Amino acid sequence: MPAAPFAIIILAAGEGSRMRSRALPKVLHGFAGRSLLGHVVAAAAPLAARRTVVVVGHRRDEVERHLAEIAPDATPVLQAEQHGTGHAVRLALAALPDEAGTVVVAPGDAPLLTPAVLAQLVADHEASGAAATLLTSVLAEPAGYGRVVRGPDGAVEQVVEHKDATAEQRAISEVATSVYAFDQTLLREAVTRLTTDNAQGEEYLPDVVAILGADGRRIAAVSAPAEETAGVNDRVQLAAAHRIYNDRLLVAHMRAGVTVVDPATTWVDADVGLEPDAVLLPGVDLHGRTVVGAGATVGPHTSLTDTVVGADANVTRAVAIGAVIGARATVGPFAYLRAGTVLDDDAHVGTYVELKNARVGVGSKVPHLSYVGDATIGAHSNIGAATVFVNYDGVDKHASVVGDHVRIGSDTMIIAPREIGDGAYTAAGSVITDDVPAGALAVARGQQRNVEGWVQKRRAGTPAAEAAARALALARNQASDPAAQTDPAEPTDPAAPTDPAEPEA
Image (tube, rainbow, N blue to C red):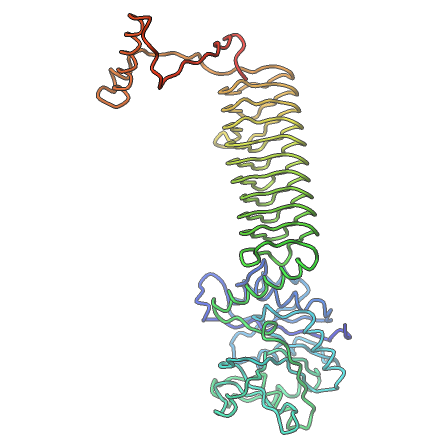
């Protein structure tokens, strides 16, 4: 890493009308968990410049609030009226002390810049003693970009904007990427000599190159692949940049020992952490500060946001936001873990289960069709199908506690706040409105009452009434003729009825 530059200036004042956005200023669009501006700030951060200045303008309040979140030490400088990139740099320099050193200038819409290419730019600039060093790329279709014009000896002479270029100059494929390293003292003097004598009537920063060259100053250039210098001006370019960036992240993770089965359908944010031997199956997207532990398998078709997945866990066709999933835990398919969910080691959450602000203890299971909200479940307990923790009374949320080795029968409603003691059971279909002591069986369901003939009276003429009539006629025939055969479509149940004093749990 070269010596730290004196300052970095990031230009983020433009409207970005081609984004066609009412919701956000251009530089706040982004991908992979960062805004466009955030990507540039992250790329520049390892240079450890003494000062960072961000020029803001369009919807400045929103940009400044975002800047305070991602780079609180950066200094915003207002360009109230956008009169060109040279004008923006002149305003930025006015906010910096006049000291010797290198100043790096970069656009706020170049999210593919890397710390390595910026470090190379600074190193080459300082080694060459140049007044200015351009970062350039060679494009197959350079339309719209400023062309780098070189002299007979190959030295850079000037940068000509596309609108001002001649036909011969437009044939040049080497373009300026709007990223520069300057000697600050020379830059300060040169920007005072910029004019608006061009097609757009603006002060062009690239014109500084021609000014310094005319003064006999050395102009250098560093070439970088277009995939590292491309800017974003519309949503098509935004999507293309996201694909390039995502591929870059996945390659780095795979080289570090992560298995990505289908990179084309796998998306990860910049701050996602993946440990060696983690496996990402097709259709996985990982957001925020999600971490996937060693040996864990995520996917297929799983979305995790700010979620920690423990070693050797398995998360299948699930959505999790702000959850913690313990080692060897299993989740899914089709589970939803909301904020505050914690699954301890070896826990299991199965199909069509939703959890919110809930803890499932070591080895405990919530296998299917249940809602667990504002609850703590102890170790090695089982929550039967269709159980609901009724945590909301219409005004406040209430919490429940389930102990260790508890068996909650299917279709149990637990009306919070409740506590179910260690080793307790609840009978299927119960509505639990009182605490259950340790080791007790809770039975809370109404006595069954059959109203004979109701369907024929109240639903006469329906298929149900006709089916009931047939069944009753068959029963009468069997009663009058004991030798009659049972309808083979309705086999009898050989099991004895359960003792009503000991209901099934």
